[in-house]
Image (tube, rainbow, N blue to C red; front, top):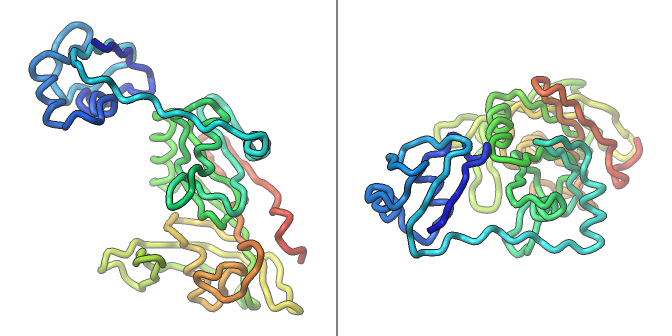
Length: 289
């Protein structure tokens, strides 16, 4: 028998989904059968699969199959520890806002044994730590982390309702004429690139970005832009700017100007409802205008 006490993090989760999370090697039909036969009990009694768990509920599971082992945390090197310390810009009991280095993937996979989330999980000692938004490997700057499931749900809902303001700065090729402008289009990932459309009839999703010129460098024919994401689509700023003949410098996927670093930084996050306003200076590799 295995016993679980429900924490605030799992409050409101369906019983069948909680058991499924603990026993990934048991088919969903098997989970339903266990609950129906009373081999899964809540506070000593039977519940239906759709029962919503309450904090402090006690679940007894009578099954010979061992539960899934907790995810093991990455063992950090001295360099990774130093990176994590420098990355943590803001933290409280529920939220961590972190500064992701340029060139680091957000997650393990695609040839990477670990990513930024694995480093921060290990540093915080919390395998449940997650980022509720993400930025490209080549992009540097702020990402929003949640230390528990309840906070992740709340922050994701705020993002969905466009109540998290995300500001970027980018250096683009060419001199931008307008002082302020808005780009609105529809984006869809196709193979290894994101393609821009003027409509969403083909499954492309709406993408809206606001821009403001910060400075122009006439000698080197480039412009520093401040951008605000109204939506948050994959490669949104990169695609929209490239298709207006102002690709971000260093973005060789959508542009042609090579550089050691892609000059795009997630510089500021504002969550008015939580009284949060976090801003970082531009990285050292950004040019001085």
